[in-house]
Image (cartoon, rainbow, N blue to C red; front, side):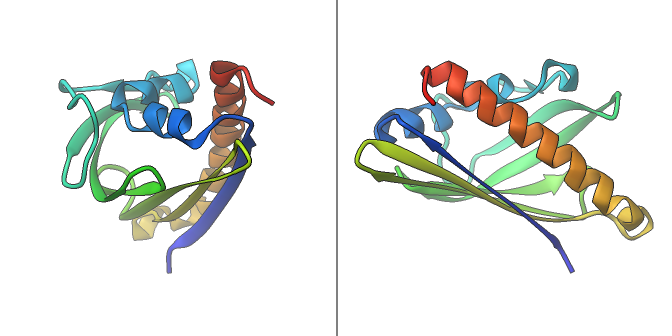
Length: 148
């Protein structure tokens, strides 16, 4: 059964600005710690859409690897879903949801993942790492948008 990980962030930034940022795949590396050395392996499309497949280079626990993700659902400006089609996880589904109330945008991430059978003992370590990663991401977004 997949592990559930969720996080929510509120930014005093209009939805349109937040969506424009997330819709540009070149911004992915701005949301990840430099130690992960995240980079797009091939030239990405200017804007994402349903069916786009991207290969992302990433360093996991110091080991270089690649991660192939596909945009499974695309609902501008309220959300999108990416799924892994190649990489570390045996299952990965990440739903990004955006909702604005009075100029404040809520960013909700819902991730369901599973490691291959022999690595499932490490699920707690992966959750711990994801908490750290999203704390970094939330700080980066506050800085990028100069928001609280």
